Image (cartoon, rainbow, N blue to C red; front, side, top):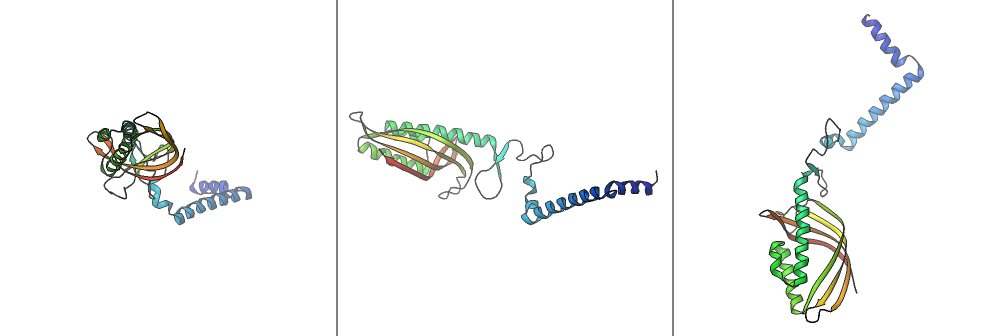
Length: 211
């Protein structure tokens, strides 16, 4: 088969009939529109974040998308899991310290400004002759990298959303003095100390109703 015949057959495939010609033109217009949209929207600049199964998987194995921040970034999936597990562990220790009125327990869970504030709260509760019993229900726990506004060196952050109830109990009688229900959306910043992450700062909002 000569090159001329090959070109003619290719031309017949593309332009042999009006329906075929229109289909080819529409396809070309769609491709052009997609390329133009990507160029205008800046998608080409973020082509490294495209997820193309089998060719360019995103996120890469062992990493996940950072849920915080305006620019796409990746974090270690295994380290994020550890931060989450340590935060939940730290939270249980803090609840135990508030229940017992024992600030010494906080050395296993808390540091920095968060430790100072909780120590002050327990000291205040003890002076008032009460302890706090908290029941917490978590709706979501989100882990990522976000600089602490009070200490940029702390960048692991966990956002907790949920609800709970606090019972203030008299140490002398064991009776509930009052209760408080609340909904919260808090961010906790953690820093590594040895093999564990400890809570170093807390920020967020809580809406409460005294019972």
